[in-house]
Amino acid sequence: MTGIIGPLFFGSEIYRGSSYGKTHPLRVPRVPTVMDLCRAMGWLTAENYRTSPRAKPASLLSFHTAEYIATLQRAQAEGAVDPATRERHGLGTLSNPIFPEMFDRPATGAGGVMLAAELLAHAPAGAIHVPGGGTHHGLPDRANGFCYLNDPVLALHALRRNGLRRLAYVDIDAHHPDGVEPAFANDPDMQMISVHEEDRWPFTGALTDTAGGSAFNLPVPRGLNDTEFRAILDGLILPRLSAFKPEAIVLQAGADALLEDPLSRLSLSNNAHVAALRALRPLSPRLMLLGGGGYNPWSVGRCWSALWATLAGFDIPDRLPEPAANVLRALSWNGGARPRPEEAILTTLLDPPREGSVRPEITDRLRHLARR
Image (cartoon, rainbow, N blue to C red; front, side, top):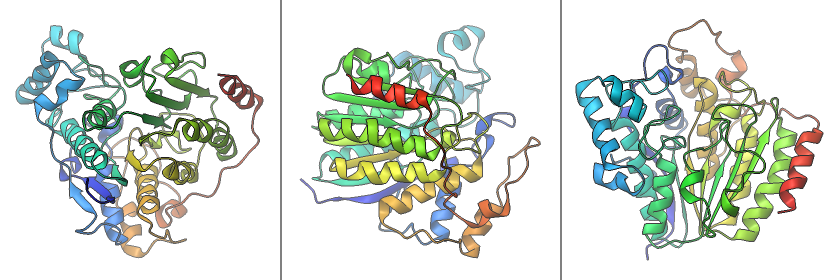
């Protein structure tokens, strides 16, 4: 057994300039922004940064079908798919378009999480951040919801393959992880907790959906605030994980639950994500932190950079130094007519708190889940 791992940050230059296309929500830079911000802050060094490897096709077969992986590679090589392939595998759609790195980019995220899993499983303790991971909608033989592969499932499989059994998956993305939950339904050694916006795609993860006892789903109303998230953390996530005692936690920290995100209607500040990470870290010796959703380049970059600082023990200043602020000033929506953010967003990393009352819907749903 090796010594304590990390904290380590797994990144890659493949995300720089790679885009789903000019009209897609993922046209905006995300992982490169986190890398550049953290480097500007002095938070990435030769000691804690690793280049994420690209997963080999065979390593993806613990979840995905061989036919689908071969089709995904062929679509990248040919730059097109026929109508039958589009229908069968969900490739070449508005959500999952054809683009030059459509296999290599998700395979890099998958390679990163599987290496992270191997390192963590063979250590007594550790933490690794893979911001390019978190593609929780991918299905075994089909692209789904901007996700060509499902790296959270691949990460959990790799943790199991390397000797760990009792695992927890916590997902605070605005969207329910419809690709992860079915993969571990009826598994008594897996605990999945998802907090997601109600009445939003993919329209799964109902309060009564337990995945055979392996999942706790909490759909929340639009406008979820920091006070309500803290109630969820204290009333659901922390008690369940404390009782479950996982050998490793995988936290999917999608930034689309933040107020500024264009694809959800939740109202969290990034302090909620930081609070979740701080609270979860002591509950297991091993933690893997993933990215996920998030379609505002400023809020994603600030949130995931703040999470890395929290995980790695760096102090977050009240005001960013000019090199870091310049990273944020250089960002754009890469098309469209959305306005640039206010100056405070460009010069700070942490949001002002977004507190409020705890609505009865939240209290009632937490009470329902506590009865299980």
